[in-house]
Picture 1: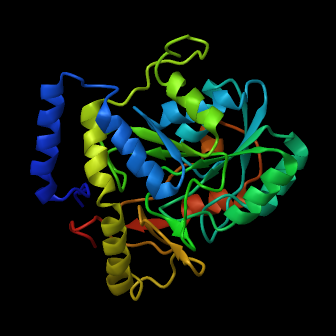
Picture 2: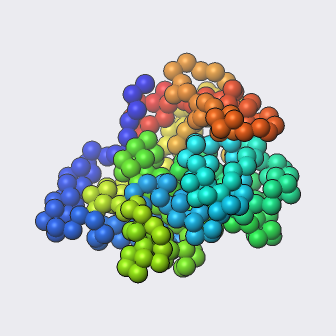
Picture 3: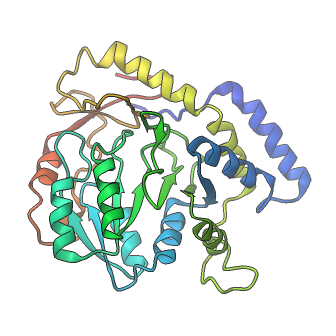
Length: 324
C-alpha cells in the first residue's frame, strides 16, 4: 500500500509563499522561521524547544550535556537502532531493558532490575507507535528518586497526550523526529524540548559548532529555514491530524481489530501506527522486525521483546490517505 504524507494540499500555496519570503530575505538558515517553528513546538509542549537537522543531533546534544561518556544508559531493545547508537556515539555504554506486551514500551519491572545491576547515568524511554509508554509515571518517579537522567524518545509520539500532558514532558528532555514518515514531517529534522535553561543554551550551541565562543564542542546540526517553514505549516495542523486519525480508527478499525493495543483512560495516541496482535493481510509490517539487542549481538533475556517482534502487525493508517 502506498504511503501518504499527512500534508494538506491547500497548504501548498501558503508554504510556497513562506519559501518565497525566505528566498527574498537571503537568509536561508538561522532565521525567523526556525525561531517560529521552535516557538510553536515549544508552546504546544509547554517547554522550550530547539530545532535540529535530525533527531540524532538533538539526541546527541542531550546525551553530551548530561555527560554519559563511559557511563551506562539503559534503553529498550524494542526501538529503532538510532536510540542505542546515539548512546554509543556519545561515548556511553548501552544496556537493554525488556518491554511490555500490552504497549510495546519499556517494562518498569525489568527497568528496576537493570538499575540495580548497572547503576545507569541515564534512561532512554521510547514511546512506541504514537502512544505514551503506559508506565511513564512510574519510570519518571523512579528516575527522579534515583537521580538518573530520563530522556524521552518521542519520534512516534507527535500529538500524543495523557490527561492533557504531552509526550516529552516527563523526562529531562524529549527528542522528536520529523523524518519523512512521521505524523509531522519536514522530510528531515528533529526537535529537543526541555525546561532546563542550561540544556537549552547548550543545545543551541551544540547544533552550531559551539558558536560563538566555541566552548561547546558541537557540529553542524542546524535546520534550514525552508525546512523550518514546512514545520511551521505542519505544526498548525497537528491537532487536526490527530483528531482525524482518532475518529477514523474508532469508527473503522477498533470494531474490526479487538486484539490491539488498548490505551488507559485519558490517553490520546497520535496513531503513528495502529498496532494489532493478529496477522493481517496488507499489513505495513512490524514497527520493528528485529530487536536492537539481536542486531547488536548483546546477550540478555528479553522475552517480551522477542515475543513482540514475532506477534504484532500494523494496519495501514494515513491521514486522509488510503487506509485499510
